[in-house]
Image 1 (cartoon, rainbow, N blue to C red):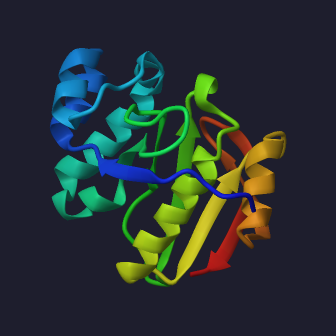
Image 2: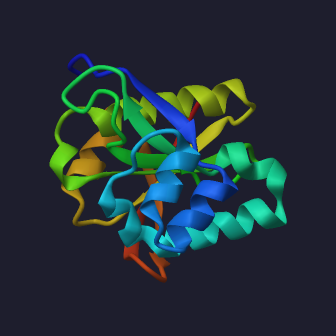
Length: 171
């Protein structure tokens, strides 16, 4: 893998998520401490889901959503996407990871840098297995999964994304 940019994964708290759900990008950016891209307003369904998780189980907040803020590379100092987990580790120690890079910042290594950080944080906090669910047509994410040693273990139908291939790896 080529040298990756350095990124910081900054937790989005309930205040930031509530502002995003309400469509208030300025308030969300203020709560996040970094300017969030307009594209974040397209993910209201995700912010609503994660906000519900935070309200119902505040202790899972660190396992949910984070802003990807590069410290090096072309997007340094700005939010270029989001990454996180679907929840805390399950009884197997498994966490599912996910990420999204805004279109203008793709192909700069930010997804790989975010996955590196997600895996390291999960390992340091007790997770033993990482999962990624990827659309069969998402060649770039499939390549990232392969580069990180994820192995296909099945498939599922996601109510939003449709058919997904399911990959796991030990961490």
